[in-house]
Amino acid sequence: MSNLVTLGKSLEEQVETAIAQGDGVNVFLFFQYFEKVAKKYKEQTKELAVDYWQENKELPHNFTMKEQNRKSYDFAQDPKWQMLKSHLDAREKVLKESAEVKQDYFDIDGEIVPKVPVKNSAIYSFSQK
Image (cartoon, rainbow, N blue to C red):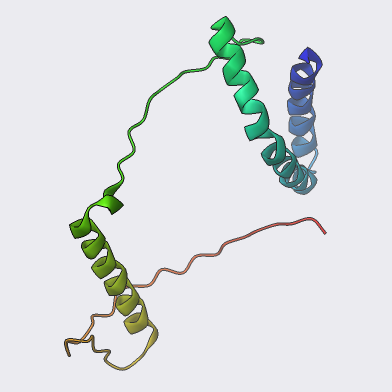
């Protein structure tokens, strides 16, 4: 297993060299593929690492782990919150519709819906054939 950590350090050096030699596109594409592989195995092996840490209170190769507890609130249990969320969702829908038309847009109460600024941004996604 320690060979994988050594391989990771070697990989980092190879990546730096490839980028310095102008091969950044292939490095990027390699990482696209590597992310797919990592995603496949990361959650599965994360539990193994947590179990190891809980048993040994340390991890090999100078890795550390910090355990934190996080609160999660289930607001959907509150009827008033559900109503407000529903109104917010409906308002967002009306504002989006208003932004897409040139003429005035009226809501169900007959009021003119303001035109909100629209920010366009490019999204790039990559996949391997």
